[in-house]
Image (cartoon, rainbow, N blue to C red):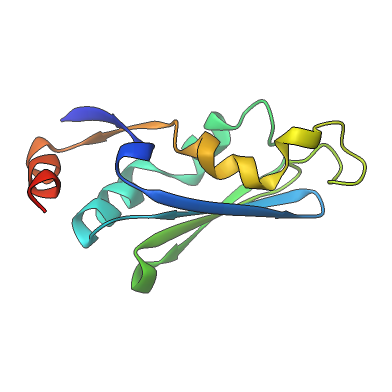
Length: 115
């Protein structure tokens, strides 16, 4: 196993609505998607965003897209129009999540490097 930053393995998109943020994390293949399901839990995402997300984090799985979608509630200090976090709205959460480290089997990383 090796610790790898999500930015090395994934693509992500995010946005906001009201006081919630939505972050989608996309895997490059099914094997890495299964690693994401094991390593990127709602609890770990909540812990990763501990300074920003005051509410629940709910994870939705989208296996047809090899994606995990996280809904982070109470994440924007009241919402875009009332928040003092002008530069910290929803679109920045995907880049922030990709700074998270996960553990990945060496052979999966080797296979990914070959392709």
